[in-house]
Image 1 (cartoon, one colour):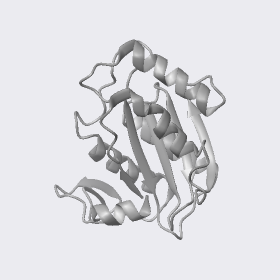
Image 2 (cartoon, helix red, strand yellow):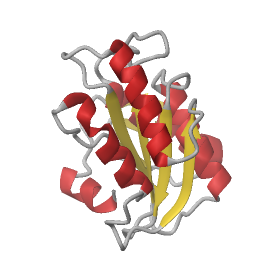
Image 3 (cartoon, rainbow, N blue to C red):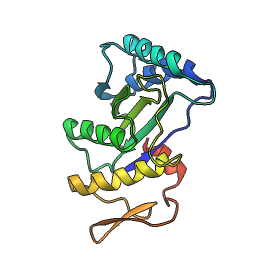
Image 4 (tube, helix red, strand yellow):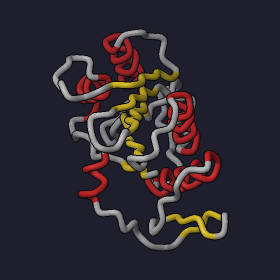
Length: 191
């Protein structure tokens, strides 16, 4: 599995509606987007608009201009490996926990609009106490996300993504000390 963190818009909180609407395909502007699963975490709202208002309220309560309040990750797996929905939901929950975001507001959406199914995860970095959550890895959250992917591969018996920052060698997850060999363009094609 591959985890990536697409760049966010630099306008801070104003992108909450755009990002959540996109991953949920709320405005139906992506006709080819085949939304197969949608999960909300730590949110009472049942519609995209209600969820956006809730997330915006927490951001307004604690956001500082030096911090983008949202984080966005995409998990993708090989074409010939499409896990059941419950398992995909568990992958998202596992990543949120690995990044220390399990108690924050989050939206997860499974897209099937590319050759590879992929799970978008958007989480609010601002906690319910108004303070930003310190992501795992002290600024290296993508590295922590990649390690979580290797752990999930082991837990669920999935194909191992070799030649990355973390690899599985003889059943053990090791830090290879190198950057991933999967090009950014290749990752973008999958996500």
